[in-house]
Image 1 (cartoon, rainbow, N blue to C red):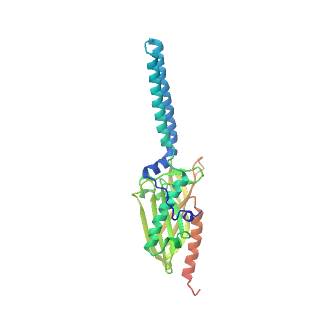
Image 2 (cartoon, one colour):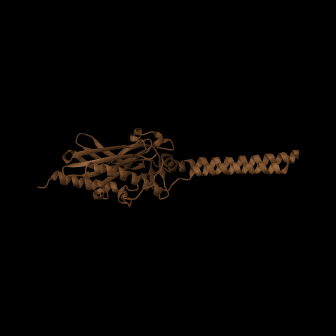
Image 3 (cartoon, rainbow, N blue to C red):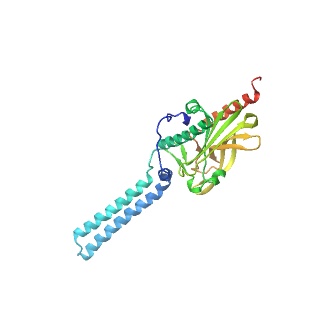
Length: 286
């Protein structure tokens, strides 16, 4: 699935605040805690009602109307507290709306970057090569971000969504390859990073998919993972990379495997970049 080819061009995409997106990622994590809070509120409410009813039976002087009033107030307070907690665990928007927000935001960044090198959006944005990567808590590159900004969420469609998304786009020119990198921090909009680089084809060593050992924090515990990343390697040793797949190395139950929904795009991009590099290095006379 190529997210950049979705029907978002020319349409206004949803606008969400940092608070809303953070609530979207925290909803599932807060569910278990919310259930405990609701149970506690219900028990306390029942306990208060039971105490006042018992006092009426023992003392016999408390008016029935007062008991009813206290009971109603207790129930209203309990119901209000439960409604507040439930609101906290219900995501403020759908998974598809989050996707539309992310794609729309990235398209805006890409359009401005393409304009900077004289390319109109309508010419290339639908077919441009790209890789979509993510950051998980505990990964090697996670130290570039605040721990409280790194979240992931398993959604109803079985795919994972991430709060830190790295989009790398490639625009081939005659003699150079232009590379645009956008780091989208969904829960901290001030932490936005972008880079534009140009490389002569002869200086690019290759485009590869590489496996590496990594560590991921799952429920605050370190777990061993094997991550697969795209890498564009340059002759000076520098590389541009993005992780698009990560799976556990241990056979522990319930450890998740992380994939980008459009992870197949990375394989297509690698194949097309390899062909492009071969053709450019071979030259027109080959």
